[in-house]
Image 1 (cartoon, rainbow, N blue to C red):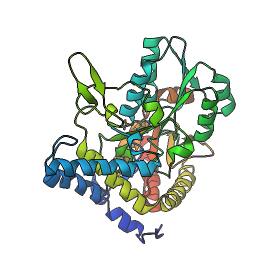
Image 2 (tube, rainbow, N blue to C red):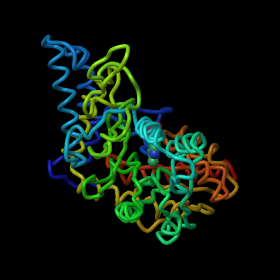
Image 3 (cartoon, protein in one colour):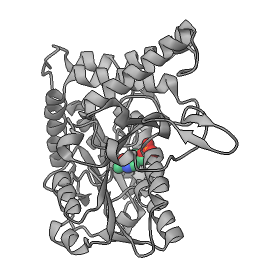
Length: 411
Ligand SMILES: *Cc1c(COP(=O)(O)O)cnc(C)c1O
């Protein structure tokens, strides 16, 4: 793993960009394998946030004074960076949100106004709760029907079964690009193409997708695409909703308040243009600027390098974990990212996670906000190791050693 990337950074230099990676936990070097929950932040992102508060803090889109104009410019530049990152056609198709959850709720709320009794919304069996519950809420309110595309034992959806669920009443297909629990990468373009044949809108949950590879919303042809800044090396409380201009223009606004209006009288309010129509109130300015810098950082590392590194980690970790007696991997899709969920016969994931934490290893245990998926596999939860490009083969070895020691105590 001493490969050089195109900016000629070694893996050690990359790790040095992330100050937290050199700390100790419980007297042991931190081995951070919970990147599916949130990724760590490079120093330049941390610096951008404190620089904003030290030198630039001001409200945006409001003042004529220099500080306000500088803050507005920095925030709007971040929007343009995100536009290019996703290859959206226009920067006004990029709406700042509080995260993936915020983006999905925004669309659910706006779409619900035109949802009719008997309309259908499709999701998959591997969705995060944030792509289940908002649809359940509006379906209940509007007497619409939520249908679930099933998966097989490997954790893949089958397109034939999906095709059978699509009808001319399908208003929306909302699905995850990449599963946070199984690592499955869904056939996104295929799913969207099939939805469009029935005139349905599509929303892609990109929370786990954006960190692992280049995405192109135009090529994908999604109507909506959402992700969280904190899973892309950026700050918490930031997120993005991409929506096609022509569709966002037809939707009613989500929240009312400052910035989203053109004119207000007590009799009638007219709404602002995109993207401001969907951005009521003072946003997370420092966060948005930080997210822009996080994207600069990822692009400087380059996805070719990231994918090569992550593929090696996935293959090696899978091979080594499977050597552990009684260990079973949950999620064996042919097309999979470097997220490995597993169970060990007779051992509760919580106990395993607690013991390996004592050895400095951070993994996630539980249902990973995908309870219906746990029910499908008939398990209470899993232990999940999720990798990023700054993880190393040596850390996989430490994980496996820690698991073996923990299992020695537990069974
Ligand atoms: C993390 C995650 C979410 C929710 O993201 P928030 O940042 O908590 O809003 C939704 N979907 C997937 C696939 C995720 O991994």
